[in-house]
Image (cartoon, rainbow, N blue to C red; front, side):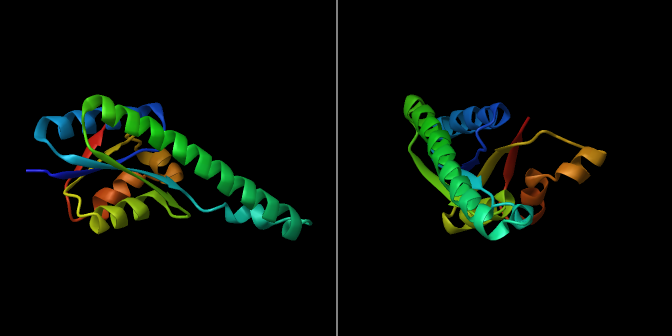
Length: 149
């Protein structure tokens, strides 16, 4: 049924549950996996202040360097888990995008037939204030999504 799973992760403990579940499913059905982690854009509010032109440029470079480093660490952990499970996996780090947007675009570009991601399951004010990338993916995707809590 499913041949190519997109497993999204932000490196959190909750996302690790999604990875484990997605890998178990992929192994059971013989599917391949693409892991994705996303680094959002440098916060726009950081550009303000008296020294904006000088300080923000340095902060941007540091932010991008740290995001790349963190993305590599997260994906290396995913690859190790996939190798241990005997599942073929590709690794993708998307920079400067909102997670839901990157997940949707990549799932389509790679021809994935299932998205696996974790969700905190926030409701009410918490969801309104913090947003929900999972809810956005669910709202706009054309393929099934497996949400792990």
